[in-house]
Image (cartoon, rainbow, N blue to C red; front, side, top):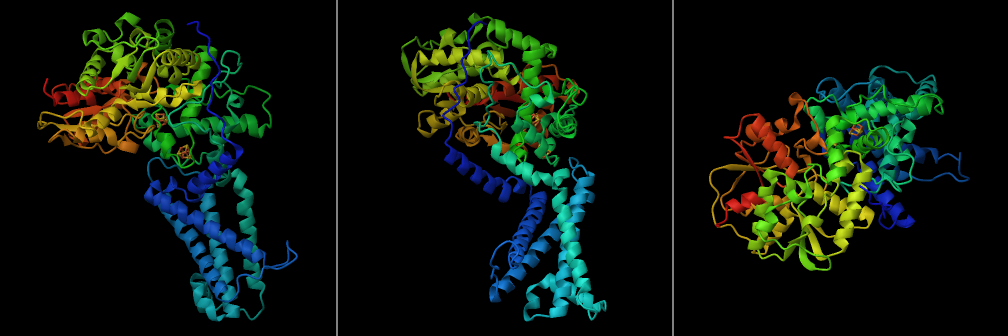
Length: 635
Ligand code: SF4
Ligand code: SF4
């Protein structure tokens, strides 16, 4: 491969003003309203109670401090009268929220502990400290109410309860205010201890997590960060901890080890010796030893001892961890940096990975097949091949799978039949169509990817079209979200979107009713989670008269990976830890479906492989959505 790459032309940089606005919106939505935290009801409510209880207490404490002329020449004269009564009530409720939240957390950590939750000393340290602070606050308030007994004391209900309890216990305040002072100063001291603990305990996620939310890379969903100036840059990937970018190091620090990523990770679920949380924690431990504790690393800065060599290769880049993490931590970013180092710097990659990359470099596709073998059916079906300078409305980009894989070629045929039937003005690039490069990029070979992207963009520029349509979920994501990094900005549609459009316009209709077979739609990660195409494929299936559709438990946003992404299509996976087998079990046991419908060639191949290796060929079939439509139409 000799083509020169050009530097990524990352889209016009946003102005400083829009960056500030984005930062503010992100903080409001994700750090203050905590929209992701609340996605899981019990821990979400628990966390919100603690967080908002603390916010109320913090604001209230600042207001109280401002009543004294400590920092300002004038004293704050608010709240007074009715407002003061309201203030007392709100502060009282804030403390109650903390106590309820802490008790919920304790119950979750002891009684209803999910398997992914781990207990560490600082989890308990934070909870105990918060509980003590709240109790001390109420005790101080109770003693104050006892001695002053204001008319409004009922408006501080919990403080009043403490006052009544002290009275019932025979507490004698005749000796003056020493007990109140003791409680007050102990409350202040424990609160200061809490603040001082922030940098050394999990509590620091309040700061580092918020900073991570603001400063995480601004990338399109599903896009990886390009290596700028790849021809000349010295650092390719991360082989030592200080070779990660600063916002990636910040991300390691922000992880609060909640385990939500591990809970959804298909690799962990399938029994692979891998978990995104463990990977992040290993990198954080290395960062602590090399960059924090020793100030500046003098000796070896490597994390080799902490991360098994195979670790970065066990992620399918399905993105579920990214979508789930309440702090927007992206383990895939770390995985890709590690892979880039092994692929581009040391060349020390697993055998099948090396083989797939060699195929891409020598033959221009991961199948390693000659160009002449690409989509022979195009000629047979008389599809127009676009020549330089020619125009079409819809450019059909088939991609490698539909070109070289025998099973997937049937899908290509079915799709072309549908486009012809709907009289779509379409054409293909024929021999000029190159691999989109997605596999190379996900396997860490950014150079090969950039070369392929540049070549395809040059080809796209040589013809004229209104939109690109592709039946490949991975190609769709790459063309839509990653080619703009290199100046290739196009309207890109997945074929499920186009088919839904054609059905809605009445240009495609089914002639036959469905039979009794139950169908289930498998959401491919790269069109589902990364690109939110959930409704269109279901609309298409819903247009087939009498079709029985059953959903798997993990669908749409929480769709479970087929095990083929992130280059896993080309890797040797231990038969005991195959993700596709786990997904197939959901099809047969939960959805009780006879047909799996998908819109991705990798899902098609992986699920087909699972069906065969489980000996279920008679019971279940996997089909692309174009094939399903075709079977419900007359010839
Ligand atoms: S990466 Fe996010 S989801 Fe995973 S353990 Fe850390 S904070 Fe939790
Ligand atoms: S991207 Fe998917 S496979 Fe990779 S760590 Fe995240 S959840 Fe696991």
